[in-house]
Image (cartoon, rainbow, N blue to C red; front, side, top):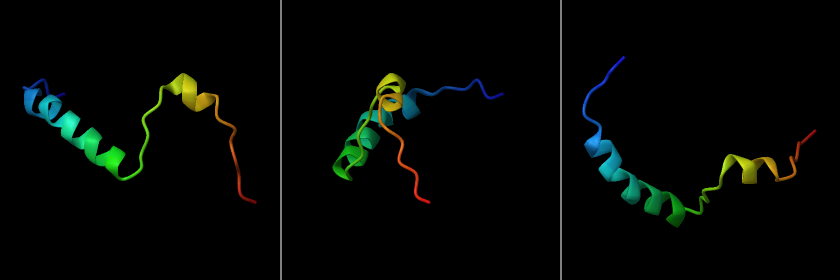
Length: 42
């Protein structure tokens, strides 16, 4: 297991989240996600 310094990873998260949101992604909690109806294609 790698127990190194993760400060750069943590520091980059706001930029990555902003990018994903600009691409139409939405962040929700697991509870919110489980509340969505599942749609299966047959």
